[in-house]
Length: 562
Image 1 (cartoon, rainbow, N blue to C red):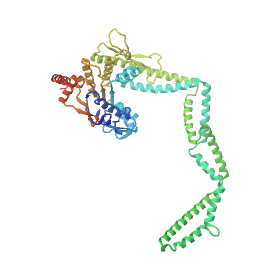
Image 2: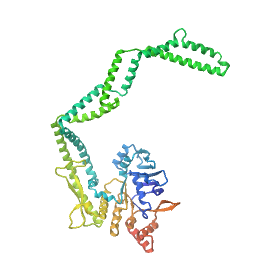
Image 3: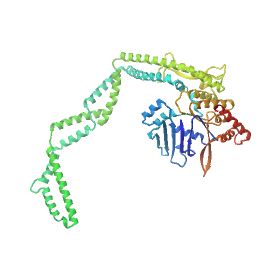
Image 4: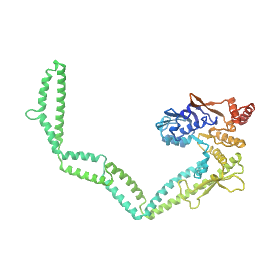
């Protein structure tokens, strides 16, 4: 459930902070006042696509924050745990910033996440039904998902098992198709991969090996030059008639003797001491290196041979050891897949047939559960449509692709919603027969039913009642109120019948100050609600009669709550 919402610099909203309660909250106001902007804010907090166009003119960023109370949903709990998001207190605080430079920052309970992760979380928190949401009903490919949503507890375990088998089946089928397409080419490819994998494995390549061997080879090839240089250092510094270190020591002692007479002499003395000991370290190090220096002609031959092997592999598979190893990982994976299915054609095909039988069996079970659910859904939709003044309408879930079905990732069923709106007409696809108003009522009927099945904590209706009036408007109001008994509902509406049934009412107004438009939200008390309902009934001119009508509408809407 959405508890609090804070908006900064979103479109015409400079700053807004709202608190929401359970059951139904309605947002009303004139067109363009900013009602849908508030819903846009919730949508962005649920993972909606952000854009610089949302940022208020003259500002560098927009900032949104929402606090949600969590229900005990094991799937959401597992998702949050997998993302490392702490939720011990049973709430989520989602913060999102969109900057004009394109940067998008999202944190959930302080944990930094990306938009895709937020969208996964948001699917459990908010369900936004906009004015064009009924367009989903015009897309038959979405209908199977709606049916599965209705029967989630029964369908999900079977669907999960089916998809595991489907993955195995498609893997085997791809191997069979590839092998049968060109048996000779397949065998040649297998032989080549075996050769390449073995060749690289036998080389036992190591990262940075080439650089280390090249450095060692350079030292061996220039052994005489290195030996002469080190020998010259040792001889010059420590040996001969006048060793350099002895001469420096003599000079150092002389200058040390005058150091106390002047600061400049003291500095000179210290510099000579530093130089002497530094040269002494050089001489000692050169002597040690000279003692360890040895030439191994056999080792040089080994290095040359090893570098030749590495060079040959790089010439074939990549211009560096790292690229050769990356290529090895790629072909090893392909080889493993081919060898898994490489025993023989007949064995592979037998395994494919067995996988198809297993898949058909679980697919048939899944289809049977769906058909049972479709029958139950049809009955419940018919009842809902009857209450929405479509009593003569008939709704059904039409199945195709049952016998000899083609396997798909979602099963063997091809599902589409069918409807007959008037007696005597043919039953046909909902997308082709239903009018816009009828589609809206079908969607509301489905949402009323699904509200009892979904784990979504907040459902938002953004002017889904556009274009209706009279008794249909009242029926829609009753349906939305029924949904609010199961889930928190936020509703934008222009219908007084819908606004009257809400437990909480916000009035959205916009004003112009210093040539800038801003939006203000007011939580209405009982008297203010009567005035707003009267305005919705009659327009700008509110009379005593319209206020009485509004008061009566409000009283009747809530008399069963007393």
